Image 1: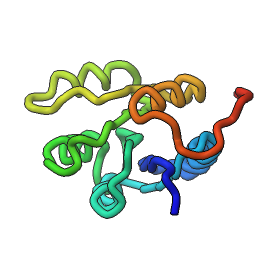
Image 2: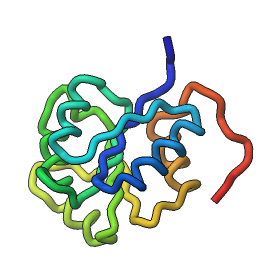
Image 3: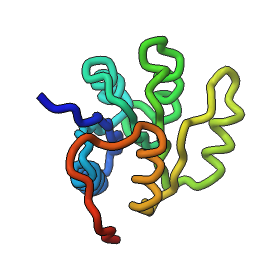
Image 4: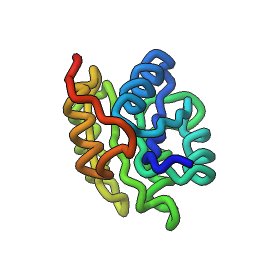
Length: 138
């Protein structure tokens, strides 16, 4: 049985999913993946991740709608969400001004800064529970 913290990575770019899965695994987290907002909601309910990284532009259900659903759900609203998008800083402002939706716990633009992302994750949920790398690779 593992006590590694689960991170649900939600993005429709398979290369990015592979990159982030490897990154989080290397840092001792248990990565889970979803290709769109609908799959995110299913996995969030079944897996109860410790944190979700969420892309904004995806097929079937957008990240904006998914974020709203996550924060409107009493059992999922407590899960920290890091918005990761290529749209830019305007998305953070857009989300923070939405009526009755809290601002995301974290925000990052693509391309992803690995060190900043890991620092953000560790600040929100702590250590991964597995071996932590001692050297930084970019």
